[in-house]
Amino acid sequence: MSADRLKEYLDQMRSAASRACEFIDGTTQEAFLSDVRTQMAVAMALVLIGESAARIMMHHPDFPVDHPEIPWSKMRGMRNFVVHDYYELELPVVWETVQTSLPALISNLDSLRHWRAQGE
Image 1 (tube, one colour):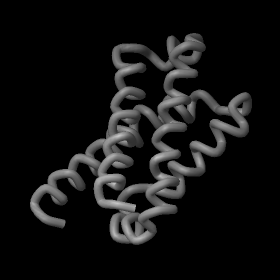
Image 2 (image 1 turned 30 degrees about the horizontal axis):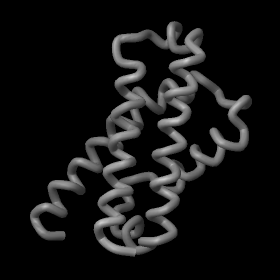
Image 3 (image 1 turned 90 degrees about the horizontal axis):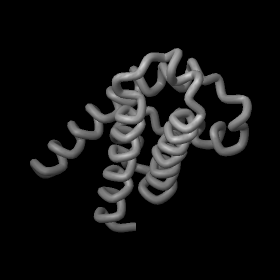
Image 4 (image 1 turned 60 degrees about the vertical axis):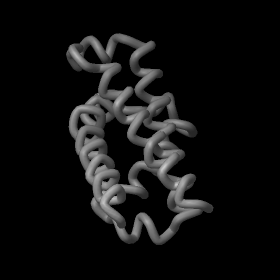
């Protein structure tokens, strides 16, 4: 797999994380818990994040080892849970993930992007 593909996966991950944050921006947890459309949109974003993480882990196994600040296995695990056990999702956990974990992920991905631009 090429470095271009790795960059594409990282960009897809960042895009999905940003969109999930945008989906709930300006809303309350209570509103999220009653809005099925937003719940499903956020769940799909989590699937996309996890899918990109899984592909990086499979095709670029050294990259996650070199960047342990990113929770690769947790993202893949969340993807698997959303896909296979959607009706068991604990929506308050999803809300908290989008509120705290995704902004941290975006920040880490942005740091990676700047580091790679300087010559990883």
